[in-house]
View 1 (tube, rainbow, N blue to C red):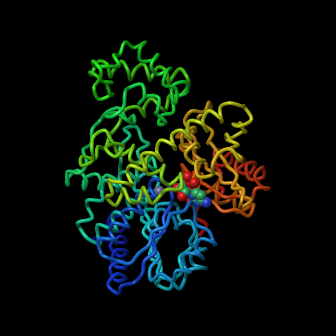
View 2 (view 1 turned 120 degrees about the horizontal axis):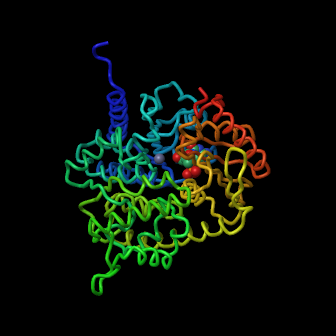
View 3 (view 1 turned 90 degrees about the horizontal axis):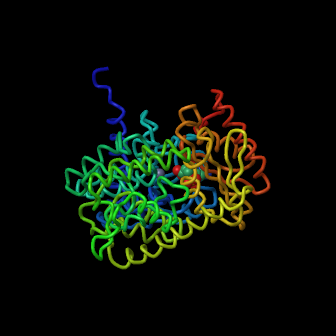
Length: 489
Ligand code: C5P
Ligand code: ZN
């Protein structure tokens, strides 16, 4: 057909349709409830929607939570909103939403794999790259989807493009050889660059590249997580001393950006050797890549580098302070930022504590035939388990085995699982979204997500059965067998 739409065009048409629903609701002075996921991408998406609605002078409320379930939907519909907007989740829970919210106008702005069907009464509009043959794990994030809708609401919302990039990086959508955002994300990069809001540079991707003393930047690296150096400033000092890299210029600590080309080369190749000697070949490629600098942010703050901004948003979500992250995305650079800085510090301390706890005793990280499992039980906070899983997946011995981690949610008699896969397992056909959905449903839980990162909640007495089943299902996928996808339609 001569006038057939390309996948990108049809995705953008869906975003325009969603924008129309928002404008119509606001025109009638309807009350809008935005509901979003608590990770960096979800907080960014909530910020983008919040700003968009604020600019329209709409009546709205924003809430953030870790997952969608029946209880939460009951609470949402009890508010009787004229429009319910779900960002960065929802597509995995269509049957539930259709059963509980069929009488409400619902917008789902998501990039997770689709499971179930939307109610067919015209009330639901879903914008999701997977519905257009685009990859939601790598080409656009939840905040990116929200951004395309916002841009259709009003062109001035192009100034939210940097926030959408922050969300995409928070979801690790740059996990390719060049550590570069691609697909629909690249369109957002172009918007941000054209508006002079973002500059893209090729450099070391460490946090604190512009801001922190080199040994501190190295010690605070969690992407890659460098065993023996991450979290250990004194070892980092020794490492740098052995490379003959001067740490201070007079009284002032040097940052990575102050290194000469020659020093940078020495630093990179020594780090590469170090990673390889520990079997972390894949991580070498992660050292250098595209760095996204937010031009309007103050240098020396965590908001200047989009990856660091994402870490801050993640910290507010995971430490029960998402409203701080949302306020920052909406433009607050006063009290919210000051408070978020403290939250970020606490979050980093927690990560370091949890990582050393996991490594301390062998029974906390167990190896199965096809997977590794971290038994976080009641020690690791359930909101932090996803972060720990993301950090540790790339530093395990066998790169063919995905990592499953869980923490107990005592008051709900459940366990929260977070699964992350390695590139090698992914290339051999592992799809964790499907595995988590199928295995959790078998034991009365709920789960889903992306091929590379997925999660589930499971009754606590079913934890061992669930782990055994995940191990089996991953084994099947590695042998090329079909176990069912996240999409059960
Ligand atoms: O919670 P965690 O960070 O491990 O989740 C990984 C991915 O899987 C997230 O994108 C999350 O939205 C998704 N997920 C899901 N259903 C669940 C749990 C997680 O779709 N029950
Ligand atoms: Zn997301």
